[in-house]
Length: 134
Image (tube, rainbow, N blue to C red; front, side, top):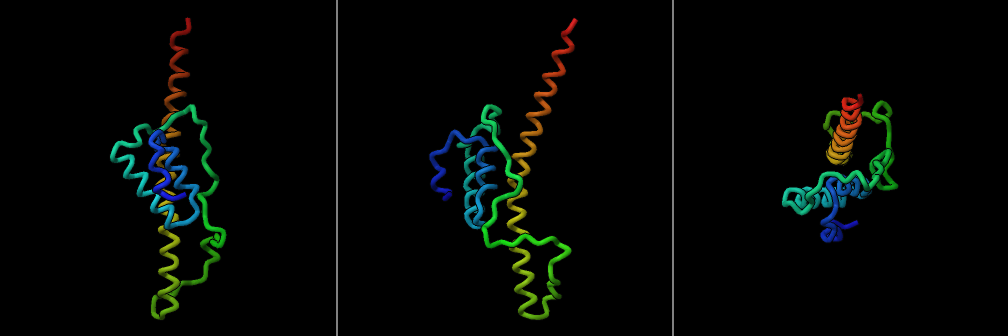
């Protein structure tokens, strides 16, 4: 999904937009869309943080291109100390993946925090009604 395709989606909430970012597999498109969403929020085009009537679901994992292989940190080959071209390339490659995960984390935080705040608020309202019980 291209960022310019989303310009007419002014009714989106911040959570909806953040989920679109998380569901975008291409890291460059994810970054473009994330920048677009942030601009829309800061300019006031996106005006609502969350709408509980939408029943949104958060993906178990952020989207990734199909050719990206996820490897546990302990199973990664050593990167070296940047003494060779191959070592420097491996370090830059690793940093690119780290940046991609950082983008996902930065968009997951508003989703999870807003949902948690909404849930706690709802729970607080639920509990407060018992104060009225006679």
